[in-house]
Length: 565
Ligand code: ATP
Ligand code: MG
Image 1 (cartoon, rainbow, N blue to C red):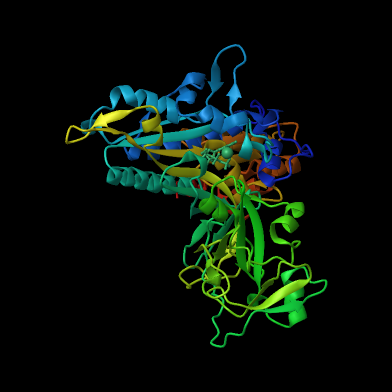
Image 2: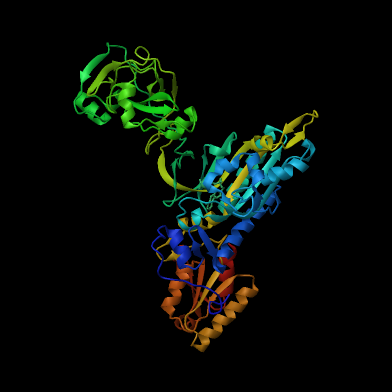
């Protein structure tokens, strides 16, 4: 492709709402333009990367026996009512005004609707069905460019199995295919255990790309390979002690001590001798959660125990419920009205300090076996940077991550709701056992740029670069330079190398170099007068910035070797 003829609208300025590198660079390098919030037009160079990503996905999905479908985005609303997901998606789902139709945010319903009529016996399973298609989600705050669009491209696939072991196998096949896909797309990633959330089902993992542009927080450890969303991450931290001496509960006046740090320093005790009480309302039932010292409560873990609707009690509800304000609340004496639970680190501890349910007073010598009855102990803790991994063999880092893919064991949630049944080997009718697996195509492109760029522009890795080589004719007004550049363009193209040829007559050399770095092809071939006089042509690897010269006789080989290696 000749730059003089093609559409390559590179720009210097980016809109102020483009704050993350991939968003800025996709605009500056002319990959895409925003049409409206969360809606993007992909321009030729951007779409060529998308197509490469989709091709990699297709190859790896086909390799695990996937069969490609193309399903409609426009869906009758009744289909979504069968699974109660009109309600579950709420405002995220786009509704069509003049028809009882919605724009599909995902495709479990359409797939199950087809499977219901045709996958009726164990004999035809397993099946893996996939598509690469546009999805619509009315994301409340679309930001970060194509990372969170209202219209985006997803590879979604679905497995149907007759047994739970079969589901495990289909799931594992997807996990393996996903690893290959992200690796071929030049991404380094973590696989994290995830909470299955509103999708239901028994197991799920997210594929996360480490990046400051991410919205998720992950606990990861490179040495041990541990990786988990902080929502569910655990670490190996010691429990509170149980002392052999056990003194009686004792009131202590703690004026102006609200925080754990203030109480601990006033009493001259370590914070790990303090039990912090947090009050929640589970519908009408008050719940007291005890945490050790300054440990942060992980609300996702709390919801796993009590359900989604549990909420923190408001400040003005506290005195009536406990007799004190936040900072002086404790479990002693609240058993009759409260559900009292505690973090596992506090299991059977004693010698603790807690609020006395009287403002500015605390209790010393709290013994969780003797003085309160704890309904149950759970892991409620938010892990922290620097803590040991659960196996104790490594150290956790907390990093930001972008979800590029998600695999779920759905089980029978959708097949049961839609009565998609099959006959098993015994001739018994059962709901199909399903899995659902998604990859965001634009997200892969943006994540690639997040992980591969510098201050000058994009650094495409070979697998998905829009062109193999950026050929720069430094001066089209010099006959020798022009002639050699044209020859190289023709020869490399004939060898099957894809070349972006900067043959502009009106652009300065400096301008061309800047564009080449911005556009980011892996190899630059620079044809200039000075080098040609010495029978040489300059090469520059975009990734490393390494420059070297090749002789005119050797240049084709050199380029071919670079591209194919
Ligand atoms: P998120 O938590 O980021 O909203 P999700 O859990 O809603 O993602 P899934 O429903 O599992 O995502 O969709 C599968 C994949 O589709 C995601 O892993 C992601 O790569 C991509 N994806 C989801 N929502 C968007 C979006 N709004 N824009 C671009 N890609 C998206
Ligand atoms: Mg979402």
